[in-house]
Image (cartoon, rainbow, N blue to C red; front, side, top):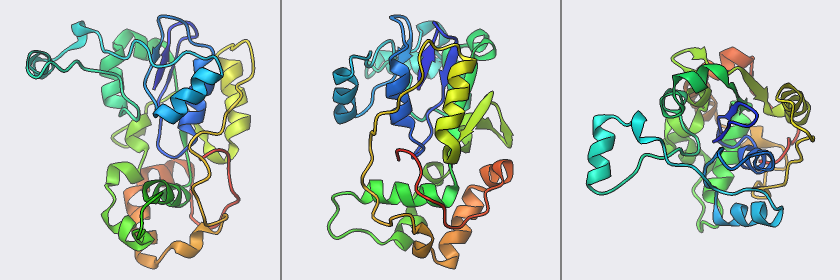
Length: 237
């Protein structure tokens, strides 16, 4: 998640949609007062090598605390923080109503079946023996299969724009122009190279796996018209 007071935008980071690459690219344009949430040490090193700002200002203002937040501040001494993959309802609370209404909010969505495969290979990386795809689909938490609550509330999309991952570069260019960024967004390849299906992700799915993804991701399928089926490899996973 990134909150840019300089360019007045909020980037709501979804899972397996090139979010880390986008975060790194956006960090280039962040000022000292902007919110940048932490990423993995490997990706943070990449961001540092590029000369961009890293994690900063990721603690939520105390004036936005609830009673449970104050209790956690006392025991065990935990401060509320901006986090990656923050649901829209919490992001709105954390940035404040004025900022939420004024700033341009954007996110990214991806074909849910393709996204599920990307998540599977990411979760299974380095595991021996590897869990089967069928077992993964049966057991993975619904909130990790669906991104809808990161940019939506209930059945409604609350982000100002949701980029289609399948058209990522063109739509990012449109967003960069909308934000008046001084340079094009250049995406590094972060968290890539873990998939082994070579674009034939549909071969992994049983009818039950198809049905579970269709049910869990029904809101984004309806909103964006995803139908399921093979698609060419996209931008950074």
